[in-house]
Length: 310
Image (spheres, rainbow, N blue to C red):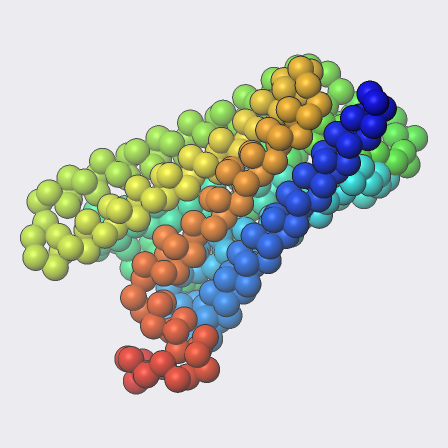
């Protein structure tokens, strides 16, 4: 009888995991389709890829899409306990580690762009001209690479050659050999969190001052910029909480494995999927010009409002 209960309980657990995987696949497919449509719209109209805020928006979309694809693959491998060789996991980790930070760093850059546009508009054309786009992209990816470089440098110095040919479940924990490495990783994440939070708060306060002093159309535009900064702040908070998730999951793993699975699933939905689906809402669907272009191309030219612009 006890054996039958164990079998039934195990089967229910497997079915629960399979259902979760299916739900995640549906959500990611939906988000990727939306992102693909937005990215296509971005490249269809020259005003978008010649304007800095839209360029930053496209970077965020591309980063989110790549991040979702990789994390989804790792999620499936993890749920079904599929192992891969460590050297392949290192390559995956490099890309994933960089793009874990690309989205929050890009959000910070977008916030600064709104700050410059609203608080120092006379310098906006100079500081945010299209010719600087490549510089911004390199800076964003350079800053996002710092945590990965630090962690992997220590890993390469500590791992023996035979370790790279071993087959393991690909997870960030395999790169941590000593407790102090985890502390260092945590310190780097918290430093990024602090700098980005200060930037968001500073921009919010400065835009708030301008919003109170503005009038008419300027006031409306300024308050819209302020609401954008608030949404960026919320999205950034979710992205940065994600940086703490591995430490929470590691602590839970010491208590109970099934609780660890549940917590990891919750973290994935709340702090990985959720902030990545906010980018289209914050910029894509709140920007009138982008929405009109999106409707026009999504409906194959049947949407005629402001059609002269296309």
